Amino acid sequence: SQTIHQWPATLVQPVGSPLSLECTVEGTSNPNLYWYRQAAGRGLQLLFYSVGIGQISSEVPQNLSASRPQDRQFILSSKKLLLSDSGFYLCAWNGGGAETQYFGPGTRLLVL
Amino acid sequence: QKEVEQDPGPLSVPEGAIVSLNCTYSNSAFQYFMWYRQYSRKGPELLMYTYSSGNKEDGRFTAQVDKSSKYISLFIRDSQPSDSATYLCAMIIQGAQKLVFGQGTRLTINP
Image (cartoon, rainbow over all chains, first blue to last red):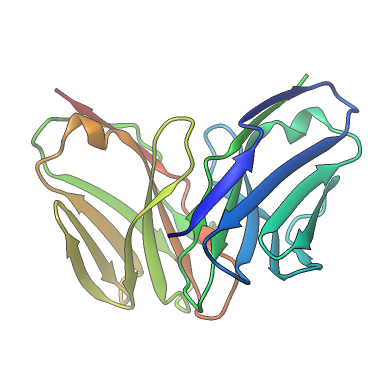
């Protein structure tokens, strides 16, 4: 069966510091991968998605970037964090032509 | 106007009650409809998935889609305290990559 992992689970970072969040999927090949952000009391905002290695589509212009160095690995990065980057970051995947997406456990980021 | 509207609640009901959660949407091109359950500080978990109009039942959960009214519902029968969570509706156009989510309804089932 398929499993999706995210780390770290929790992160506290100072403003202006860099960021790297990692997501990996097991048990499938060539998945579509997604990064979402969920701010407190708000819905999920799609940040990036990828349909293959090196292919990244950005939904929202911001100081974040994403990369997909391997088939089942998706990384969310920032060179300099802002206070507004605080939130719950979720990675998701789907595949096989299915429309449903399956989410990982999330990373809670607090920027101080 | 948001593409998907969902009452954020909170909604509080006694154990054993029937719960009705709803979303309305504006884009008639949506074809796939999903309900996710999200416990506090966890990732969303897919509960129900329906295509086009109609009903789908899975245990105590029933998902209903009325495309003519652009309205979807999730019913929970015999609600349990373990059903206490935030419920998110989501929908997508076939072939698109972007799931569009409602804001989520926070539900509490009181023992």
